[in-house]
Picture 1: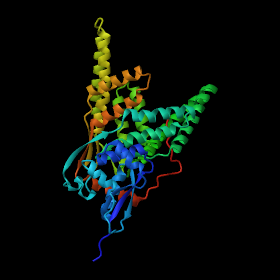
Picture 2: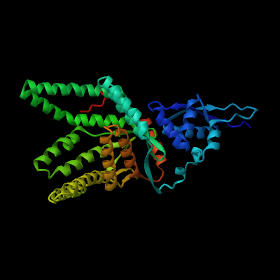
Picture 3: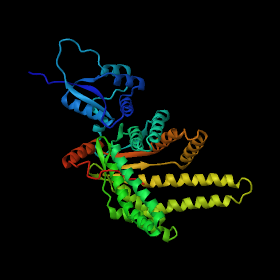
Picture 4: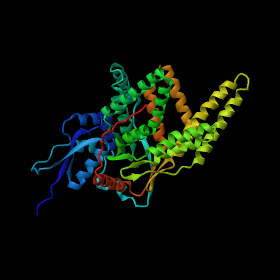
Length: 434
């Protein structure tokens, strides 16, 4: 009886569109290895990670590594009479506890379809590590008169996406910097034209301003569609399907009505904008749903206004009044940011699955105060650490609630997207931002 062939997994490095730092971070998290050991493994060409797998096991193993940004190859093993040499897999299993089990024994597969589990987001970025990316981005953007800023944006997003994990898989950002640069060039030309037209004639300036207002919904839809298209989780892209008419209502009509009603409709305008953003995004072929109500925004904003009024009243207290007012004002800022975040994220669902958030105003206040103080004292050099600390805070207080087996939905979306065969590059596939 002929024996079934076995396969081995060969490490190739980082996946296309993923920088080495992200791939190594994902590998370290998956295998629970120290960074120095991971760096050593990646430094060797075509390192064997696992041997003796069936075809199905090998496919699942490679897919799991691909989800954290690592590229691998499946190679059929040739039977040899002598014992095989020690591989990276055996070194991992010997030196580190908690080596991932074979993919077919993943704990997610053992869940009942109706079982719910809460999974926290996790951000693994490091301030000094990001500082090196940040400072290089700034220097190259200055030297190239801003041209490199498109590449800087992609590198920044790839770092934060790649270090944001959900259920042991990171997010990915794979946009082409050239397309971002083209969009920025168009925006720059329009800005120059708008500035010059205002100097030539008031009428021409007004016409240009009206054209700008008309273009805003198109810019918003184009930018959101671009960023969603090049963002993915577990190899499934996000989507955005917002329409120009709905964008015009949310970002032009309702804000204007809010100003005309002396602010009374401003909370409703904010509600319409958030609804437009979240409800028009999707994951693969499945659409997100947004269940927040306008009343929730009114309550949060009215409470924030009450806090600000209290801050103004404390100014009447002699000597220490201004100090108390400043503390209350800062708390009001932290409150409105965290309250709106909780409203937004707790209202987002994807089929049976949902997001959950419990952002804390006091901790956010401390975070902002420390970040601001250290940024001022270091003349801006603390900015990378401030961004990392903020991302870590957001991940800490945001969770996903999976009902049943999320892996099944991911596989279904991969098949659905492949069957749809949607083109990822249309004639005007760029990001425009003013």
